[in-house]
Length: 222
Image (cartoon, rainbow, N blue to C red):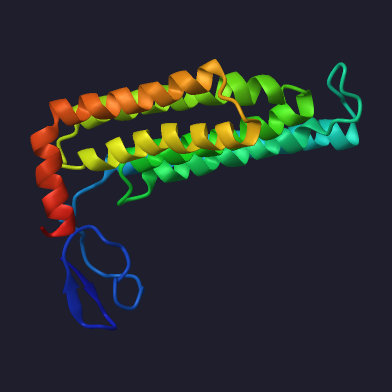
């Protein structure tokens, strides 16, 4: 057992410094009495590696854009490195959300979809693809997210079915209504997205009706 000559206490395990005063311990160490978190170390290493790659891409992009003045063909006035920085920052935010405790899968998926759609709309604006993005890409992505939430609701084992269903329902209804009021019409892709949202919500209620009733009573203390 190691001992701290300053605190005059014995320290078990293989520590080199005293956990109280941080001075060097004397004596012979023993086998570690604390579990080693190898999985967390690997996750931390992978995160640092991808963060280094992201920073490298960001610096290289800004350098090529503003220093070398490398431009995309057909877009001589576009500072593409700013769009690249936006996507890289969004990617990092998504990685951080995956490791954030207390956030369910529905929240993570929904937040990432909203951020991705926002970044795509900004990118489409500068490349002249805004019309096809709003009328086709956005409703297709939302419909795919609603389907994913439906699948997650069916396989959920943590009694959080309502979160998936409400998230999927509102991702179809609210954007479709906004589209209808803004454009005074509803494109086919938005109509399909709305119908997918309502149909899958009804199907989930049929398959998970009892679980939904129990969850509703639990959440609202009825």
